[in-house]
Length: 321
Image 1 (cartoon, rainbow, N blue to C red):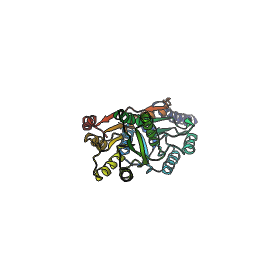
Image 2 (image 1 turned 180 degrees about the vertical axis):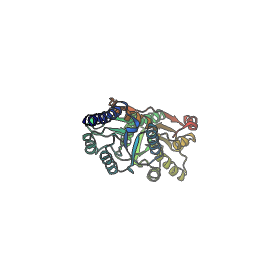
Image 3 (image 1 turned 90 degrees about the vertical axis):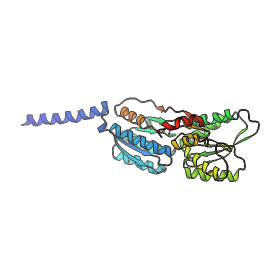
């Protein structure tokens, strides 16, 4: 009897160990739980990003625990702490802002849960608090936008007045897209940013701020919007003022979501820098590799292009987001 009991216990231990080892080495999808804390649903880009993550997790067979922070950092921190309590295998999130994450990320590290950043970075000096950052190079996006403008006005003999709709204050894309743009235009003294204000990445706020820009500045030559939704809101304000977007005021935007590309194809947006929201497949690959114990690159950059109005016309029929 004792021999039978001992044999049974050994089989149970072997089974348990086998399951653990399988998960570690092969990353069995049915065993992998992923906690994802999203920024919110502030734009068409974000909606496409959320759908990509949800669809990719379902396709991978992961147990996805999803939280919408409604653009509030405190909500994201609360969600991450909930994921820690739930003992998920991996935590991923797109930070609302860059700063203020060290404490909760240390809690995840102490709990032995790896963290992956997507879309946006954090400014923590301790890079051991996260495994990798998957997303766009926002500085490069700003540079592409600024370089197009610099090329358009390289022979300008008079000042070109630029207004800027920034993204959410303190967010990585807002900081970096502004920095990249300014770096690209600094060589031309005629390119002058005369007003710059946050539009919170939303269409409604973009319209509101553009209305204020138009009232305060009688001559605006160019609008640089940190995302398509703000640009689309600004277009409404420009048209309401009796002006033609893309002609009376040149418009540069970032994202290249379907509505933005549509506006570009109609000549209302002159140049769009792409920011690919379909990060789901890359994220699931990273989660699988982390669980399997593989080493990831600290920075994984997504591939992206740009669109003039003519290029937007060609791209629109096949646009997936």
